[in-house]
Image 1 (cartoon, each protein chain N blue to C red):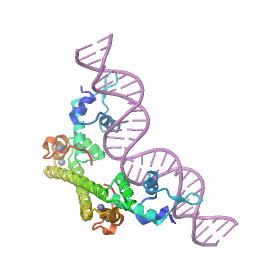
Image 2: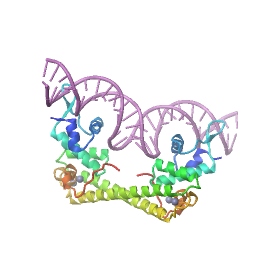
Image 3: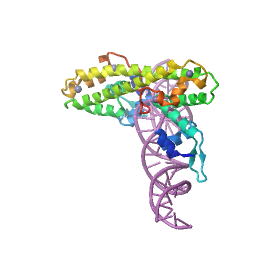
Image 4: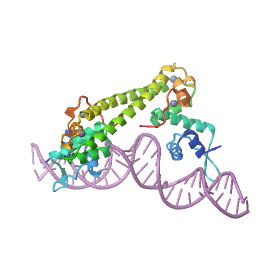
Length: 142
Length: 142
DNA sequence: CTTGAACCTCTATCTGCTGTAGCTTGTATC
DNA sequence: GATACAAGCTACAGCAGATAGAGGTTCAAG
Ligand SMILES: [Zn+2]
Ligand SMILES: [Zn+2]
Ligand SMILES: [Zn+2]
Ligand SMILES: [Zn+2]
């Protein structure tokens, strides 16, 4: 039986985060000692490792929930798991595209400023006036 | 004098978001009518446009706050504005790098799965075991 | 038996908004 | 001047995905 700190160390997950995953139903409710401390099996550690690795690959907790459900039913066809991964891939590609457009604009405004006073700063000029941009950037954040 | 809805329409910002910017001190407190409705000048609209455009380029609200402060003192040298932009550029480049590594892994796992049952799904196999990965991906999210 | 690291719950905080409820104001039209 | 109704107001809750701290309890080594 493993204590929560052991899972924490072995997966690089903060203790609070593990408890959080339990709270939102991503981790099963752990067994408890007489005194109320959580105790885990190896399979819980595997599940946590799966969650963490999926997070590192950028999957949302909702997607991970689906993937875990699938993983628990090994006889099913895996089409759905694959489609979740493909969706994730598309999202990543979208984000890269957007960030590359941002990178281009940022590079340009940094390069074009010759470091005089704020009044003629190219960086601030571009921020004030989108028409100086070469690309559109509809969505915010992401 | 402009109503909040006008600023909203002219900058593509939700009304609540404008009020939020005021709440956190990013927009100056607006003047009010006798009945308590906010009324704005053109300069407020310019400031809001600056904020929105900066957000579209991925700047954090904290960075925008600094940029606005600089923009309000036109006699200063612009080195600081430029360094904020360069920092932003570095962040964007970092994120692109990270996402490209993720993209590679996702592509590979999607390509290698031949769509049999969940038990042999390559996607789930990789998620279970990072040693199948070709790259490291220390940080989560971002 | 004592110590102290590790555990517990509960609550608050972060970023950057967005949505809802329930009420009031401003303005156009009659 | 009356009325309708869009647009405004405040206050609060909630989203993802954790993270931090307060204040108290338990476990295990020595
Ligand atoms: Zn400059
Ligand atoms: Zn632009
Ligand atoms: Zn598969
Ligand atoms: Zn991996």
